[in-house]
Image (cartoon, rainbow, N blue to C red; front, top):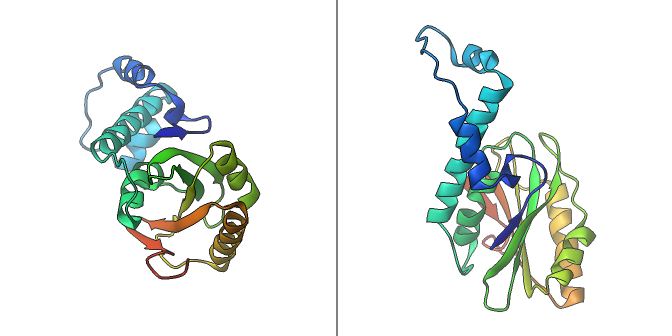
Length: 191
């Protein structure tokens, strides 16, 4: 499955991330420093190192959980967990699938604030049509860790369902990530 990102460490190749790790300097540990003070004391290069380690970890988790066919909300959750877990702002992603239910690609479309992301269903549908998707799934996270969909979530889901129906593309699900839990519109009978 092809994953497209905006400009951040997720765009780096594994080699580029590992290169940032090899440039680190060894420091003596200070057991009396708090975590917050430690983070504040990091140079920009060391912060990049730390973020590279996190990104490699996410990729490792994803490669071990690679799903070849979407069979339900749990497989969607496993695919998107490395991309949506632990984010401090909302992001909306779409997964485009072929007729066999295999992911063609996952793409981030919107990035918002702490409690809101502006999702334009037309942009998602344009990409679905361009990649000849047979079905679409959307996912976004709630940094508040609330599983409950907002009114905006409900409206976006309804709009996407109507647009998909009009284009002959199946709208399979909308998952809301809330930490280690999720809400599935499909599982709840709302799609």
